[in-house]
Image (cartoon, rainbow, N blue to C red; front, side):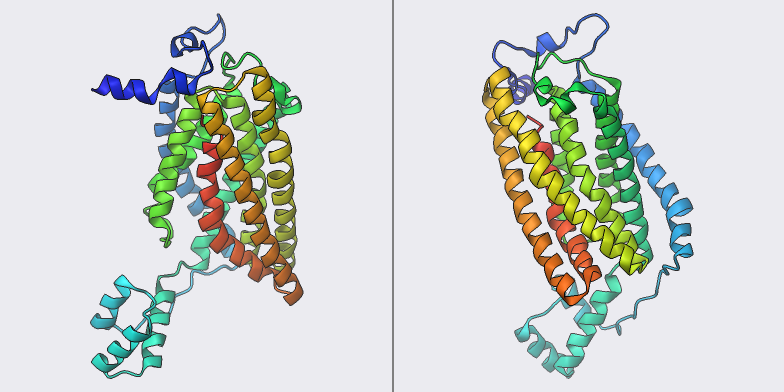
Length: 365
């Protein structure tokens, strides 16, 4: 039974080009090595290291920086203890008109007083600015570091300058230490997010993000096993680039450096446009859609791969439209920091982060 399920999951007809088997990938040339699924298990202990490193980083680096920038923890106003309202709050943080009328009669309170209680109670659970600053500083540091590492490796790789090199002799392409390190770092980072999600700022999309992290981990693992590393590292670098500026802008916003925040938000918008709407479709997607067809030829996973790439591109267009609309409104109102808040807190945490599961899906085939 277990063997049948494994054979179905790892079907060679689906994952590999015609006349290629998993056994072929088990026999690399002398001095070379192909990706093997057991390699990726190293990401599990590395994730623990990344998680501990994050705790040390936030305590020893991020918090001192927050103190220097005078970003205080702050003590939120506490709502008046009330068992009836607390019970309602646990099921619905913002009661409708009908519920307000019922609570008003039950407690003999004015509806405005009840609304005020719920507002204070919601604010009570919101994360303090220092906590948000520390989390953003950690993500900024990781994105910056992994992008520099990835681009340094890709800069001397022939497939960065000639994307047709991604497909020559595929899937018999040797694994380089740089590719392995890049994948191991990304995968261990997402495993660490799985651990830290239970102690991080609790958000409304907790379940969605839990599913997202599991899907991302699953898809990165598949892309590694299928030796789709060359185009995979390209996709990761293209998507990591703009996230650096988004996290930097959030840091400036938390520190109340208005002009720096405004400038970084503009850079983020431009980098998002250049990487997601120019480089990604006309460089990466073109290579997978056209060049891979010419060199490797289509196979079952090829159709899924390109379908996910095109879905992702459609999402990029929608997200940039939302960014541009918010930015234009904010610029005319002279409140770019407000736009940043809207983009970073709402869009990034629901749309932009969901993108990771999609863009990893795009090269996981």
